[in-house]
Amino acid sequence: MRLPTRLPSFPYHPGPLETGSVVPSEKARARCGSARGFIYAGPVYAVEKVSLCPWYIKDGSAAAAFDATFTDAFAPDGVPHAVVDEICRRTPGFSGWQQERWLFHCGDGAEFLGRAGGDELNTAALNAVRAELLGWSDDAISAYVAALSRDDPPTAYLFRCRVCRTHLAYTDST
Figure 1 (tube, rainbow, N blue to C red):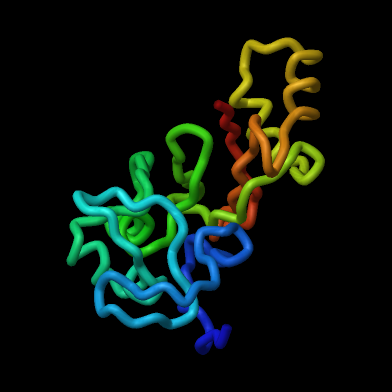
Figure 2: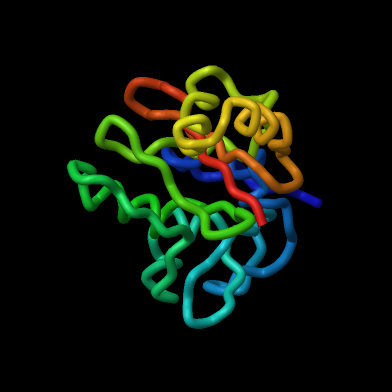
C-alpha cells in the first residue's frame, strides 16, 4: 500500500497512528471519495456514519460538513472555548471502554498519548490515578493499578500537559 505524505499534526493528539485513532487504509473518504492512505478509526459523533481522513478532521471541514465531533470535552473554568472547539471538532478522538473524556491542565487541553498499563505510568500519572480512587484502601489501589492494561480493562488513558509537561491519567473499565 502506498502511503501519502505525512499526516497533519494535531497539537492535542500528537501520535494518532501510535494510539490507533488513525490507521493505514486505502478506503475512500466520505467527503471527496478519494483515498490518501489513512483513515480515522476513532469515534465520530454525527447523525450519519462516515469514513473520514485525518486532513478533513484537521481543517474542520468534517465537523462542519457532518455536524460531527470526535470527543466530548468538559473543560474547567479558564480554558478558552477555542481550545475546547479544537479538541472536539479538529482533533482525532480515542476509543475507551466507556465514555471517553479529555483532560485539561494549566488552562489548556492536554495531549492525548494513548492507553497505558499500570507499569507504563510515571509518578505524576500514578498520582492522578490514585486521586481518582480517593477513599479506596492502599491495598485496593495497588491491586487496581497492577491490573491496569493497555489492551484490556481496566485501562489508563495517558495525557501530558502542553504547558508544564506533567503527565496526567484517568482510568476506565467495562
